[in-house]
Length: 62
Length: 267
Image 1 (cartoon, rainbow over the protein chains, first blue to last red):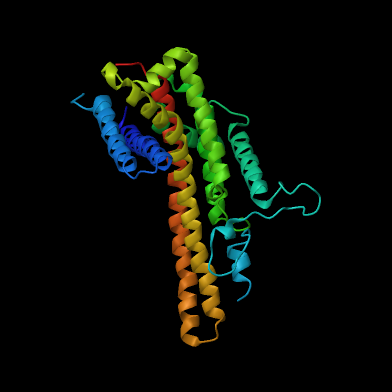
Image 2: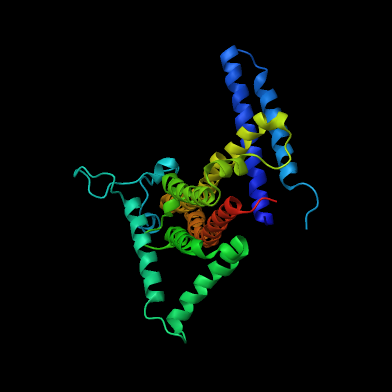
């Protein structure tokens, strides 16, 4: 994968993490009437995104 | 001074101040006939498609071993896409995708240049529906070639599960990769094209409509500022020329990139 492709994959993954788990947290919050799960979901989502990014393209490859 | 706005912005739905999203509304071409979906922007896209077909037919018509000027120009344009996008990104498997890549880069380029061309002066892809349509085609293409090469199950596994993720995290990672590869990818592809052209055209409208209003205000100082504003809009047009070419290139590169990631061997 070239540099451009990596950049796009990173952006796409970060967005997906925030949308998916932030959105899930928001849904939980509006269902349960709490305000806890949205920030938790956002943080979990970004953490997972970064984990996948490192898994996919971390390390030194030639 | 009244005729500057229709000359520089002939296809806008609404040229009142301030310009807004309503300025991008389409007008039905034949009102009252029950075919309101045939509007000016759709007709522009059709004209763009016909132009692309005509240009490539002219380029490829009566080819000879020693190319003449016309054929040389066509081959140069084709080689640019083939070498800098096809071969560069797709490697040895580039050949079956060249028709799509060439078609899509010429179609986007022609439609973006409509934004700076008299008669039209409106980039078709500043209407988001057209950008979504293009992204949908690219999405169908890269998923179809991936499924064709690996089969449905294997392809889904390849696209949703990166190597080396421990089993405990699968339930969290698989939806994430799924959303990333199948939802945010096509949406960002469409939004990137749309937003660049929408914003550029909105800025042009601010300069042209605002400048015209200043000129018509009757005060000498305002009129001078309006004249400068109209002149400056031409600088923005030049910038939009660059943005239009760049976005056509980027859309095509990313399409090739997605195809390449769908058919790439695992490592």
